Amino acid sequence: MTKAYEPAWYQALDARQQRRAMRWVRGEADRPAFLPDYVVRPVPKHAPPQKDARYNPAASPPSESVDAMVARMAKGKTADKLATARAHAEAKVAGAMRSRADLATMPALEPLVDGFLYLDTVARLVGPPGSYKSFLALDWAASVATGTPWHGQAVAQGGVVYLVGEGVRGIDGRLTAWERHRLDGKPAEVEVFDGIVDLAAPQTDAAEWVALARLLFWRKPSLIVVDTQARYTPGHEENSSTDMGILVNNLDALRRGTGACVLLVHHTTRGTEHARGSTAIEGGVQTELVMTPGKRGTVKLKTEKQKDIEEPEPVELHAVAVEGTTSIVLDSADLGVDPLDLPATERVNATSPIYERLARVIVETFNHGTTGCTKVEAKSALQADHELKITGDTRTVGKRFPQAWSTLEARGHLEMMTSAATGNPVMRYKITAAYAAELDLGGA
Image (tube, rainbow, N blue to C red; front, side, top):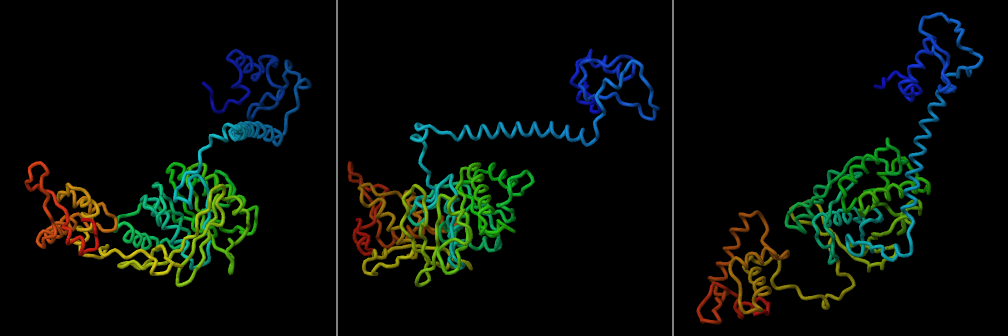
């Protein structure tokens, strides 16, 4: 069994050699030839030096100094580390070599928010103060967390981690407003990190951002939002291409380890539409998006850079206050369109009485056929309609639907279907043609 106090050279010997070495150490035998040159016979503690007739000091190497011994031991450990690092480097370089066939079979980028954000990329959203860029970043975060389409663009649902550098207390209010406006109050499961780590620090085991990276590698989110660049690069010069180059490399490491879209939020230079600081970041990202204040309280989102992908058309958004909250959400703005050219407002909409909403759903879903619907089917169709469904808890929904159905029955707006085979009434219904015309539904 190896003992902790045994020197390395002794542990490297076999049992027979160890016995011969110990005899030499005790002065009972000549120095064995198999011992390394640097091994010197120790002097017993508190023992006076003794002359060993069988050992010729002149034939042994001089005792090395403490500094030399430490340097030699460190050199051995450094050599091991260098060998490991070299193996990793060689594997990394070999893995990055691609043939022409490899290039032809590389998969296309996978959209996260179609046209704007893509998985396995680094993107940046920039804008001046007051341009609602953080509201947009949170809008995207909640849309991804819930799989909710973003202003007509498909969204791939996935996990989200939002790094909040400032204003964490306001995030709950903003999310609450978004949830009420988009999901009738259902929660959007966005994970929030409110610590500050230096994302422009060198990649070492002691770096806090490396610990965060390990956590994110384990969670594998689809979207990582860093809000803002300034808060997550404390003490660094944003005009330094060196510092910002390290930031890009570190964000890229987060991308590689998670496969996520890493979205960095930053400010523009005053009076311009260009990101503040070094251009090293713009050169190192897949996507650069710019928010600019527009007319009549709107903002415009446009794509400054979308590498190897067609850039989408600019999107105009405006802030909408959400009732019952102290925050706003961003909705599409119909600017530059003559009001007479806009689609007519639906006669029955989300503000209409529930029985009218129910009638619209029945007409649009069942009236065009000949079989109509049952009461249960009508309820399911109403609750599946994102715009018109009854909101509230299960008890509220369960109570208000029967009231709406009873109102339609009492007013004679429900027509019972008959069996095509027997001509007898069946428990299936559709909205009468007269009531459909009254509501401008036209689907009877």
